[in-house]
Length: 458
Ligand code: PLP
Image 1 (cartoon, rainbow, N blue to C red):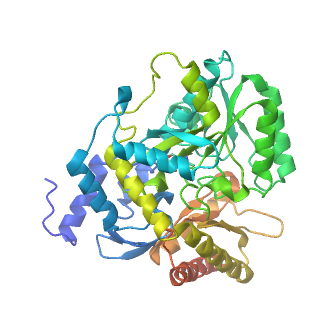
Image 2: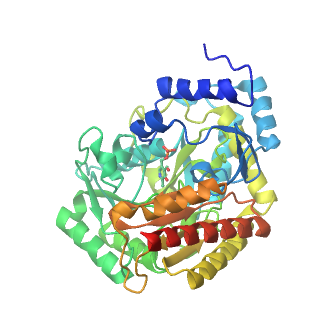
């Protein structure tokens, strides 16, 4: 049962697909589609920006898989680091003041990279755990200062913060609340700064703070650029105004840098694009380029000092894998490579090329609306009438069709179709070069052209 004796195909491949249907409950997947159509891509190996499937077809991984494979696939340096650390000390606890060098060194490194006085790191295994931890930490911070009523979290519509308990509630995409009923007590969502001015978005946030009662709000949480919401890049002054507003009401500001961290947007952390310093940063994904699960929360000295002075007894929060030594060693090596190879700079430069390419496509194809990128995080919007922002109907499935065309041509990316939008998202590995950016642009041009023709023929 399940024995694969022919690596490249035929019966063995069919067998795997059947086993997948029978036993593998996939994350964020249509179970019906999986059962009817089988797996979409059976990945076999990866090298650089490319993935190869079991049939030997090569794809450009233009999403860095899940926005996370920053240094590209197949990097032996990380495999060697993991193997060496596993042989020496694969795992040891960080509970009850136990510690180890990889955890200490990675905490120190992240504190150095994080802006200004964000210097203390709590480790987790991913983004959802990081956001849940951040929310619990800020509530604890207020509670130990005699303000237990400051519990509420204000986040943004279309924001995505993960699927654990608090992070599901903070997420502003209603589909994620449906699975197990609403979990929204003490969580509120303001309008996202998308197709609106900073002034309008800030007025909405102020109204939310006022209507909920500022002294009942623990923190405002937002991604510097909303990823799963459709790569929504705010205007340049938005986060400066957010910072001012949070300060005015004494509300903490949590930046969810799970996608934007570690060079994705052309700066080490996303908010550094606008020189804004939050009170808390959450991170995951790019910290290890996805080679091993790791995430965390960085808090400011001001928060750390309150925890040091007022926390009595044990902090009853911690994951078995908080500060996992092997994950920490891989994280350190990954960051070393990001720095040594100038990948933050490359993200900025290649992001510029990607955006130029998007603009050329927009000039040529009538269904292309807004195009945008910050570093190597970019998007192309498709519209019935870009002049008036008129959307296609959901039934036309315009963005999913483009994704399918791209897939056929060997490019993996992702569409966002909430609230009548058709957005194609891009987040290629930070090691990408100019020729490879052009490859993506060529395929994108061909794919959108094909769909434009199909729509005309309807
Ligand atoms: N926050 C953001 C901005 C994300 O994009 C994600 C995942 O895509 C998460 C949090 C959740 O991270 P994880 O899937 O590692 O739990």
